[in-house]
Image (cartoon, rainbow, N blue to C red; front, side):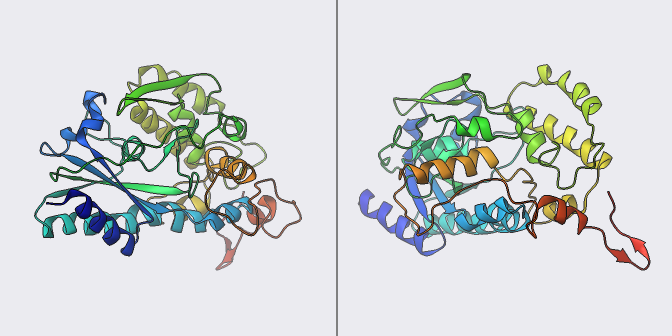
Length: 343
């Protein structure tokens, strides 16, 4: 078998069926991976990790800047993870089967290695030569910056790795640190590990704070916080439990539980609506790790892709039709003589 030709044919197939990128990492690239996250825990015969990526539309960042979270959750978050990426993984695995090899699609989920094996899609994408970690732990590419979602298919086809590309994009500007509403990204606390013989580093992101903020449990990310918004009692209880978490995914689950309590205390129609858009819950709109990063990368001309208008994130005019206060006020509707939502 001509392995280079095989890779090229699979790449062409994936790009013709919805992928914006595809890379290959031979299993040897994961020799130094933590044992509990190794791809072999999911598929014992794996010889190559195939990683696909689908872009997050840049215009969705601009809609988030206007306080509109539905387009992003429907098309840039849940829509990709739960619909487009699932279909793409299935097609790639089926193509591998049609060409004599097994393919095992790997979903992104929030289980922990103490329950069932998982693997980090971003790490796999770095190993497959698609890009690098930004300081915020978000995956960056030269084409889209932070704007892509990733999928993984494991196969028993023994294919050569693509060249790794690290240290080309993130310049440690720390704008993600300053812009994160949950202060979940530290400035000087890092995680480092070896991948394919190269040192990989990113911030030790506080997944409890990240998740709490992401799910709207922070005053700045709640879609309609009342004037007396106070979650100090809930946060103090969960802060006491944080020391018992064993890894990032357990911290995620704890943050999710805290956010659910806050949502119950301060309900809002968008919580249910956004959650229905493919299990999405992105109420912070990636203000630091996506939007601040994208603005900086475009300003530096660090990306291969160019647009006629440069992206600029920022606060909106309170008089704008999509200002937060006006959107919040517009949530009050009369149905059968009753207000269906009121702060």
